Image 1 (cartoon, helix red, strand yellow):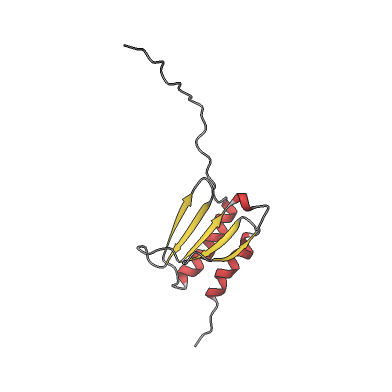
Image 2: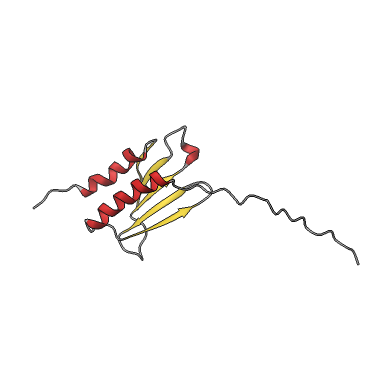
Amino acid sequence: MTVQPPTPFHPFSRPPEQVSFDRLELGAILGLYGRMVAAGEWRDYALSFLSEMAVFSVFRRAAEHPIYRIEKRPRLRARQGMYAVVGMDGQILKRGHDLATVLRVLERKLIRPVD
């Protein structure tokens, strides 16, 4: 019989890193979400915090695929910008360095002519 040494226990190991929205970013996103819910356009949302990106998904109904995804990818900060709005088909509608300007593409959908 061979004796194996126990696996080392590291009580202070850091958990895997996650990307998340900060308070100001989440406030801007939820402000837009509230206006769209009041207009009857959106009904539900979901948050995903992954190692590469954070995603705020918007649904028209709870059992569907998201109609829009607001993504934050910090690795793209120096390139195209870390914020993006992605449509249902995966097409990037707007990408940039400033969240407010990226979210304007969705606010335009709120403004429509009155009959």
